[in-house]
Image 1 (tube, rainbow, N blue to C red):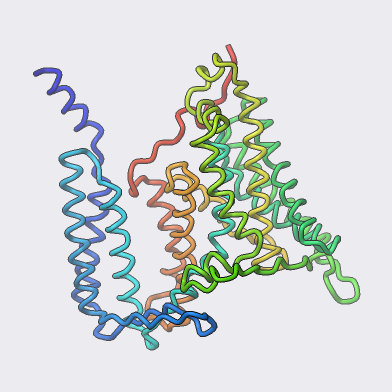
Image 2 (tube, rainbow, N blue to C red):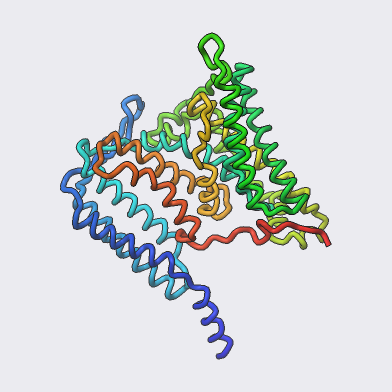
Length: 427
């Protein structure tokens, strides 16, 4: 009897009420805003573009009634979250996912129903989000490779920025986008080498090293941008005109409504992103290499006794992560903009870290989290075109608000690899 009582007490001790409390506040917000003060108009969601081969009819919803349904659903799911936490100690993923979908849907309907145009193009929302999602995913995958082996990579921002700058410079000089892409990977590796050398070899605090590298890369790229890229020859800045990687639509697949324009009308970097997500996931969880990486990140002493060189494994993974982030940085200057500007990554490296935590250090989870951040980031421009009454600054803060929620653990309990951030010294 005493053992059973002790077990119950242990479960009560680890119980977290953060998710039910957050859902309760959000459900109250939904009940007041979506239901009571919801607009009386209609919310129209366009599912196809005029250029699509297959046209889907628009989805038209009465804003008031749909808002009431979404609010009631949020209230019910918040109550379920409370009951689950009380009985089993945590909120299930199904309840968390359902609540998120309902709240976001109600939020969109509330905003669109109150606009002058009262419509939004979901294809434009998803395709525009990919401009943010792609570098976010590369950055998150870099974090997965590093942290799964036990090294915290705060330098993702610097690696993205170094990749963007180097791709623009080398691409402009050579006139070859693939040369710029290769140079971006090398730049990411160099930043990763410094992170690995200081944190693994010299046992410097990994957080401090990452922050210093971010500042170093930002200052260095800003200086070189002023001294090299702004030089004009014949009235043109010849060192800041990299070639553009074109989109390569996949026949038939690119014509699927919503999914086709989003995933199958990408540049080579977009397709490489999808391949890396699947490849790294499979390698981490279904190969001997992945088992070694996870062993080094969870129990380095045990891995050492099995003959695995812990520090060499970590070093190589940090270099690989640097290469992945460097390629992600090239997306900014070879696909999105075709020119470099100071600090153009805009803090996406830190949001990539949040996506990593949101996705529980899993490549597929990080990809889905990056999609959420990307849609939130693109929502501002889409809704401004729809002449929404909601202040643009509020919409601009959504990705960062989601970042805070992810890091605070309000999306559910996330546990990093046990040895992440802990240097290994062989005894």
